[in-house]
Image (cartoon, rainbow, N blue to C red; front, side, top):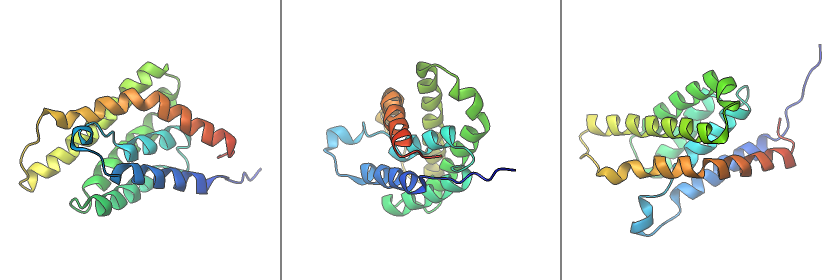
Length: 162
């Protein structure tokens, strides 16, 4: 029996911290609707690459931190990111062999699911329905997926995250 030692936990935490900073950084009103969900993109990457280290619990904690940072209902993002993490971990072997364009489409489905869940929770608590621009971050996130994947993969290789 061999015991493997995991390396790079700090890099994973720093990537989530960077995603949180990118989420709360102020943008002009014209660009605010185009901001991708950096936390979800980072969570999807780590769930696909290291499903035994980053999974549903990580999604729940990241969602709670995102709820606190964004001032939304506590548990709103935690629920949706947990569900996305579960689906990513469950399907990671299939998604990893997809070509990049199919991965981007799959990521877009996950991002749309995240937005649907938060929209459902917002409608339950009585918030008004957003405009069609609400769905743009999913499209931008899918378009940025190859770059996010490449950046985080290079970080993983350079710092030998296992």
